[in-house]
Image (cartoon, rainbow, N blue to C red; front, side, top):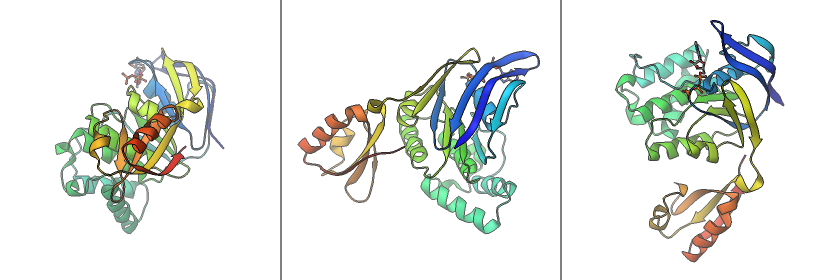
Length: 271
Ligand SMILES: Nc1ncnc2c1ncn2[C@@H]1O[C@H](COP(=O)(O)OP(=O)(O)OP(=O)(O)O)[C@@H](O)[C@H]1O
């Protein structure tokens, strides 16, 4: 199902052309990275897709969508504690108090921010603020999640954590994000749209060898995994880990795991 179509759409603000001749079709469940240099128009394209910017000319068709939008910068002046802020955004989405409480508890646990729920947002780390930004968007149960540079300024560990959280968002949700960070572009997106001076200059889907695979393995100890810095993994129950690799590198990693006496439980490709 198509979620968004633009045909030669342009956007001007105060007479200045920001986006030019944008033609693009986006379908349900896609995971798209919008990349390009600073000031090229990435955020503006994201806003056009989400309906935050209306087009000035051309044609834009949007399906009726619940859009969750995570801005690049969390407003620094918000005086609320995390819990209060999420309650408030939940109420703005017309959810019942019980439902909001349940969702806050669920996402605060999943995003490991339970201990900070009573902390004022302005005192939180950038990573925690970013998680809160994503939670407020997810609480809408969006079918389109838009993230503006979600990993910028975070340390490597928090980047990996957020990557896993974004990958674990199940269902029909379409995710579109702007990024400079190769981690998110390589590991989350299946399609990359490159923008230059407000124009789309490339729109490509990953080849089979670039697709991501997940290896679920039982390992004697995490030391071996930790010794490979580029490998991204998440601990599962007991001594199980889920390791994320590109299809091209999966055979080599499988061999390394077997050499180390690990047993392979499952290898899956996720979309
Ligand atoms: N609301 C606005 N008012 C005026 N100019 C704007 C507005 N939004 C975007 N622009 C201009 O449009 C151009 C593209 O901006 P945009 O934020 O979309 O780029 P970007 O690729 O996301 O940049 P960055 O990587 O630095 O975040 C810039 O020249 C910017 O100044």
